[in-house]
Length: 272
Image (cartoon, rainbow, N blue to C red; front, side):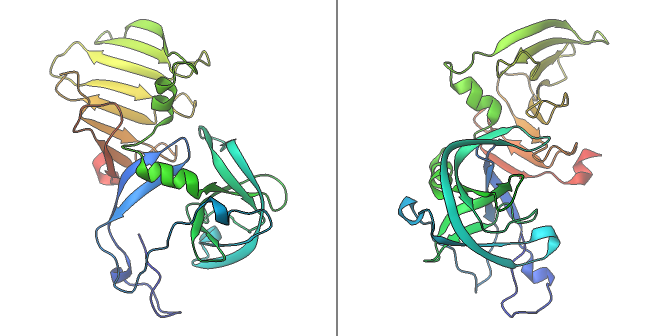
């Protein structure tokens, strides 16, 4: 993570770059929580606002790095608040959260940056824009607070499984792998009639059991959860969070549960 130098115009140095680990993620609301190893002495945390500051017509401010232009400030107004809003990137899964619609200009590079009220409080996390003019959206601070207070991560597959009324995952195939070395069990997790996950149990008991999950429906696994010692408890997971074909997060499962309790960056060298 890079901090803006204290003096305006000063060039970035290695001292401005801080190590950070992903603690948990919320794939439903498209949020992530990171923990810094250290923080510059001059840095000050931004305070979380509340729903009373989210008023239609109120001025709001954004800071981000649109199209690579670092530390850009823009200003606009709140156009509307949309509860339970659903959106989807071209190659990503469907997200859902309470969002703030604003006329504050944002572009690629603003995502993940703060939406700030006139009082200087964070009232949203800038997330996406829709086709058209001045249709920009930020995940509401109320969803941010729920995410921070929630124990563990929330994935789209786990969220689907946690709501029996919404969907009951189905086994749609049981059989052998093409090479005849493992047993396969395929699942439809979100009741759309398509294969979303495959449980692979190798015949060789020295090999781990793996669950391969396709969150964005492109036919390729973007999360792999592994039971290394085949004891029925999950040990580690690998996630391609931006669906670019490369794993960028590794999850720890000390409790053996399906959803990781923490995440760290998965360096490219580890994938060779």
